Length: 466
Image (cartoon, rainbow, N blue to C red; front, top):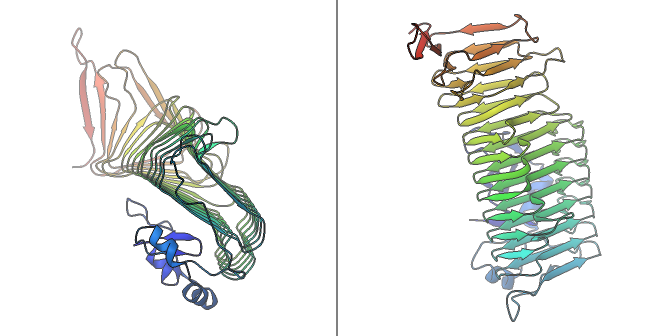
């Protein structure tokens, strides 16, 4: 059951009951634990909930609740057009406390949904089930701030329609931004997008950016993306937060949960946080959970938190056409892989890569764990996991890990591709031997070997322990 709560469809029972938490990843890894809201925020959440009966019935029985603005002026987008198709939905508000709540169930073939608010405490909530073909499928922008306790100037989009975006400038299938601050206690100027529609776009598939700061206690300018369908665009999923998180327990983080197939001509998934987390318990971290597939032309996954950490949990597939599967440009990174990663990784400092049981890292070319910074990087290849470094039986291949301080292996390292002569080099400094390598029970090395003249290569496996 969904509850329409402070301008967004809430599925997180933990939050609705007066606690705040980041969603649990599909693989079972929790991004962040629940944390209590203040009493003031909890009381506001439970007592200031209202939505008209007419709108609730329009949404076919979904349980919907929304707060009453200081001035009760809720603008609802136009209803069903006489002839579904070319009629656009365009709505904007300029005053404070004037949110937009938009529901569309009709196909639209020329213009999509444009929703813009400029006043404070004027959120946007859109639910779309119609198929759309337009320059931009759904555009939502708020520029006002969330200035009161429990106030909302954020954006929530729930899309089940298939969208084709043919615009080439500042365009996308789902294109969203907020520029206001979240200054009130428990206030929200963040973006939440839940997509279960097929998205095709010339530019951005899912685009979400917040540019304001979270200065109030328990305030948020965070981005939350959940995708369960196919996305194909120049930028598959593109997210950014630019503001600081200065309030106690404030949030300027990014969480992306993907269960669909995402392709980006440049980047499959991109996530960047630029602000500083200066408040007690505040966050500008990045968490990406992929249970589907993420591929890109130049990057599979691109991420970086200027003042936070990045966690990537993969139980699906990640790669890129140029084999740059994952790059984290700043901040420590944790990669937990129980799926398949094909290519190489570029990381910054103090990184942890755990190739979990059942996971395969099809390592190609040179993975750099941050050789230029004095740090402490660790690669763990668990029992039942495989690092496979050769795939072309017609050529001798060279694969390397550099900038890596420690390698712990209890799984399989394989150079098997039907041809002898492949090389896998692991080092801290290029060509150096300053690496701490620990092989525990069950550790295996599999290689191709020519054991006799004119004999074909054979696969040999060496094991430590049992």
